[in-house]
Amino acid sequence: MLDYLLSFLILFGAIFTFIGSLGLVRLKDFYTRLHGPTKATTLGVGSILIASAIFFSTRGTGISLHEILITLFLLITAPVSAHLLAKAALHLELNSLAKIPTKKVQQEGLEQANQTEVAQQTTEKIEPLTSSDGSQDQELAQKQ
Amino acid sequence: MLDIVLPIAFGLVAVAVAMSFWRLLRGPSAPDRILALDTLNINTIALLVLLGIHLSSALFFEAALLIALMGFISTVAFCKYLLRGDIIE
View 1 (cartoon, helix red, strand yellow):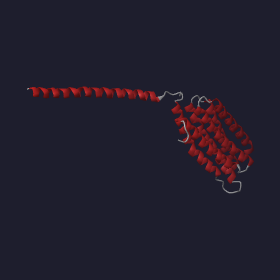
View 2 (cartoon, chains in turn brown, green):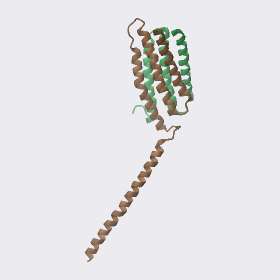
View 3 (cartoon, chains in turn red, cyan):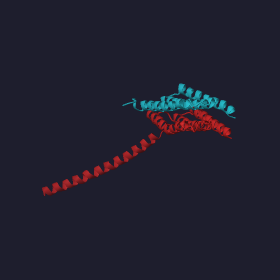
View 4 (tube, one colour):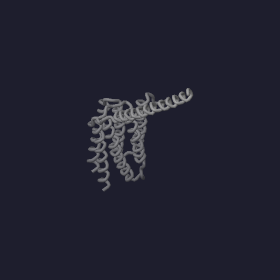
């Protein structure tokens, strides 16, 4: 029974590791390539490490916890490195299969900026008129 | 059962190592190569743990832990270099 459990875990982990690297080779874009190995290798290596922990715990030398340490470390560090890689790729502006969303946001921002500029210009146009009117009234009053 | 499964797992992980090495050589941009190095590290950890099960010796965990640590630190350093042009500012 334990043998079957161990073989299932090892085969599952090996297949997932293989699929992660297959995604790294086959996918066409850096951002899609990023999401293949970061998910699959943590699951694959995690199940292989769990199999190793079960294997060495049933050998008679007590419970072995080294594998839990490696699993925890990998689970903590995998999202951090993936985040940093994505930030580096965005910084280098790599080509993406999807449309780049920043251009649309910039256009919308420009339109909004134009609208606010127009509104400011209209208010600026109105204000000097009233002020000049007021000054003209004052000048008229002084002349009179 | 374990005697049948372990060679299959060795073969699958070895092919995974070869594929990530191909991406490391071929990768069109620098982040692709860094990602391939990271995947290579993780595949190497899987291979070492499988070897530990195969030989039933507990000598390989320290090596796997060291590779995990150094792989994470090297990935962070490479990404930092790409982002800022410098590692320690």
